[in-house]
Length: 397
Image (cartoon, rainbow, N blue to C red):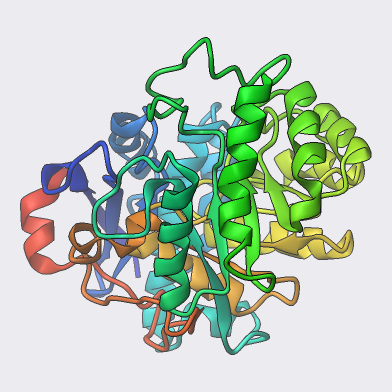
């Protein structure tokens, strides 16, 4: 069996790019078996680089045997010059290819990918509702008042979720999102003003008041620096936070360790850390209690499994980062059901939107706060035929 071509699909053609617009691929073979993967650049400002990296790397694997996944990874890593340098776009392209190859392999052997990774350790996968600062509904809006945070959480709890994730600092008092407009009176670096601390705490208090049993995860998106992350964590410590995500620059293990030493909340990070090489210093300095590798960014299913195994050596738990399309979700589930150090699955607010869910054939949503891995051959997900027609942008031959 040989790889004959790769098709690239840009979901921005049928979705609002500002929401979430995955770039996906289909690797085709001369045996009539195809595999689907996703480039992990559905959000942020590197979207069109996702198409370009598949054009560049895809032509290098035409004619290779898709079952030789490690050999293909080594070729992309060792011979492209930039592969060994890594970075977001390089690893996103390698990830999409790797996921699609595992999909082909599962279909070739007529088994789900998880069976080839070692079989199930976790039958059911607990999920949390992610990014409630944007509400928990079919339309996003910036949550401002503490009562709004409570109402969004009530919606998630009504669907069976027992854990939620909130960025309590991302939306300023004015209602503006920090990534689009930073404001002088909503300072998140250096020292956090009392007006910011007080509103952030009130938002979290409104959520905590709903239930003592609800797990609350704090997301900071690295908007804070070392000083303000420590300041905020100590200010809200008594609210019983499950873990504290991306409190500082995601590639700085020294700063992450300093924060860990000065707070009493477990620290998580990982969506902007790539490959085992990227995670190594965080494991060695014991700064992270929870890692969040993104299957579509950190190197694919192959590398994610290796990172998770490495984490287990250090007693570090895993919450795979999921902020993309349905293919991203399916790939994450294949890994999460296998690993013994699985903690919880991320159900992003993007993933409950009807537009994104309609892009693929199968619709996997949690039931009473839990998911199960697909039992179909491969990753268990494919782009819907009508969406492929609408979103096709390039064929690598």
